[in-house]
Length: 417
Image (cartoon, rainbow, N blue to C red; front, side):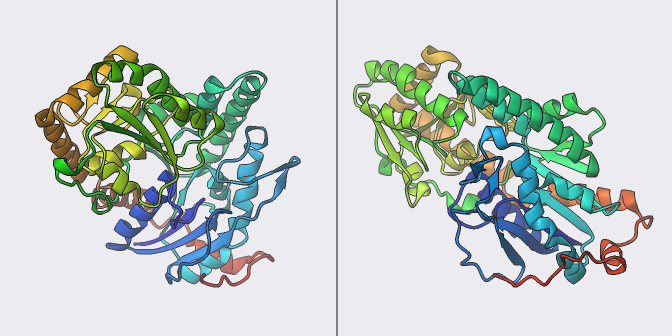
């Protein structure tokens, strides 16, 4: 099958959860299909890739309602107008990419590009926002203070309307958890939503011998400027760690990740808490830690940070919300704690019992290998793609034929970058 992937962020560094997911999927699909990628190049990325199947379109910083877009997530008051702006960048290049490649199916990744669905007519197409974007804005509202809260709640409602309108143009909508599926069906019951597993590059995260881990070090990692991670880091540092250190005075927390917010940086003043910020090799930090904590209290989707830690063979303690979209077995693959007291008690169990820590780490690694490997995800995507193409049968004209009959004036060739 010939698959054209349109991605809202290029699958190159610097890495975040979305880019890592797309890169894993592209690699696995390319092993069994003919794949090309048309992707936006975010302001923090540089065009250094020369892969013949990867075409990059710079997502220039553009004004939207008077606000500059400076990162992968637009300000709340510009959404979803910023989504439409992003899709415009690829829409100009899409016809030529289709003429050149003549794909059997177009796979759009990310909510930003959902407006592309209306450009594809009756051609087989699938969108993978991965989570319900309006839930993420709602999570920001929960963490916000003052006037920001009603602004974010209004943004959540606007994004929900955007999702309901634009996802209807696709044959399938793919998300990573049942919670996200239910949230999208609640805003439009006629959407065809399916849950797929989250892909992780298990070869990039290898478990070391337990004696090489720094005893007592608990790691929390992720992008530290997004609301769900800020809320989780504060809960862990301010409420959980004092209880853990009361039982184990040498226990310490390392908060690792890009762009720590002011609230996260302030946590570094607490006893036993270090805010490390961005590191070059997160795999090394995971491999050198004693345990991983993922105490998510808000947000949606599968937590890439959790899968990375589990792939590293690291014993993990999580809240139930962090398990969205996963079928990991609590008590065997990881430990679950709700509330500061229970969460702290589970961390202390892991830190004090090497046998338990080793067993949890081994089971966690095995779980990721069996359920979340890139190959497993590619198999599930192939099943969905085959079904979508079969549903269309021969009733539709190929999209390349449509483009040849009425090429848009903006079409021009795309250099490989």
